[in-house]
Length: 174
Image (cartoon, rainbow, N blue to C red; front, side):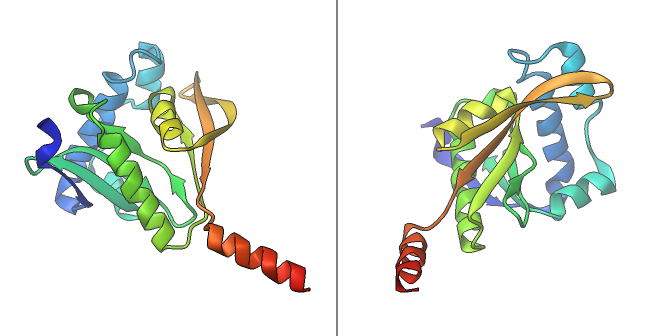
C-alpha cells in the first residue's frame, strides 16, 4: 500500500525550506483547476524560505506528513484555532494525507481546549475541510498584489458534548 510508509509528526526547523517548496508547488501546480496563473502568482510570488518563513512555521503548531522520511504535506494551527497553512505536494494530493493532517490538528486543538477551528480556505482545501465536517461561513474576495482571489471563511466546532451538557445542567440549576 502506497500510504503505509506515511507518518505524521511535528515540525523540524531543518524542514522549513522543504515546506516552502511544498507550499509553492501546491499553489502553482496543484491549484490550476481553481485559480488562473495570474492569481497563483499573486498568491505565492516566490518560494518562501529563510528566517521569516521559519519563524512563521515555528510560531504555530505545525504538523508534517512524511513519506519515506521526506515531507509531503503540512498544516499549521495557532492558539486561537486558526489554520493558516494546509498544503500537500501536488504528486501526493488526493491520497488521504490531508485528512490525516486534519485529524492530527484536530487532536492538538482538542488537547489545547480549542473549541473552534477556522480558516480562510482556498478552493483547493475547501473540499477537504468539508469532508472533515467543516462548514462554509461565507465566500470572500481578497486582494493579493492587486489581483482578486476567492477563498472561503470556514469553521468547525469542536465543542465537547459533555461540556455542553454540563453547561445546560448548570443553567437549569440557576
